[in-house]
Image (tube, rainbow, N blue to C red; front, top):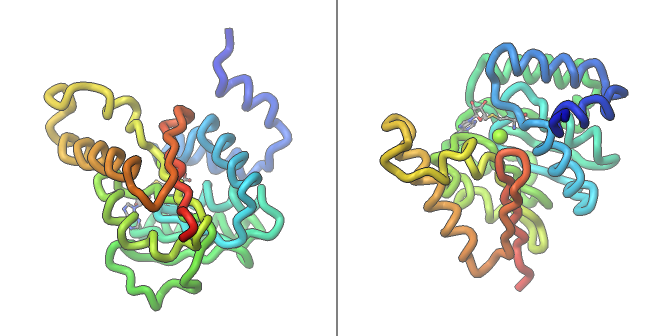
Length: 213
Ligand code: SAH
Ligand code: MG
């Protein structure tokens, strides 16, 4: 039996050659872009939500940013990347995609970025997909820029299963990161200002809807 990834990739043969090229580049260079099951679900959710302005933390090579704007007729994405090589690659892909007018990429560390560097102060959606041990800090810094009724999405909530194994079995170098991610998860699931679901698709996608006052 074929797996979901194979099945869906056949159905998506009409995808743009650029998207395919980016998927291949990411696989070769081991750049952790969203997998097919994750991105399919994420894009489906965005089509339901219909955000006009999206803020993304962690662009990598621009794959998810390009997938988001190509799925949404009127959306714009502001995306932040701190790694200069990935940033340069993302700029190249964004230009080639023809979506340069709807994607603004900022080079820098999202945790150090001054608010004035953001082109907009209110976003309909925030997508957190950067350093996994820092999710609480990204959330605390950027959630005030999410409009009421807006949605915060977070990727890699399962860290390929590492959150589900006992602490002492997690490789030492990842232990703090995994512990932080788990602490963030239980913190955000209990957060009184959000209605939160953890979706078991891709590598785990968290969906936190900001309550209206
Ligand atoms: N969203 C992308 C994948 C992002 S991978 C996609 O699915 O296509 C995570 C990226 O976050 C990495 O490229 C890493 O360099 C970046 N990153 C990690 N911490 C960051 C920070 N504090 N500020 C900005 N970018 C960060
Ligand atoms: Mg991710």
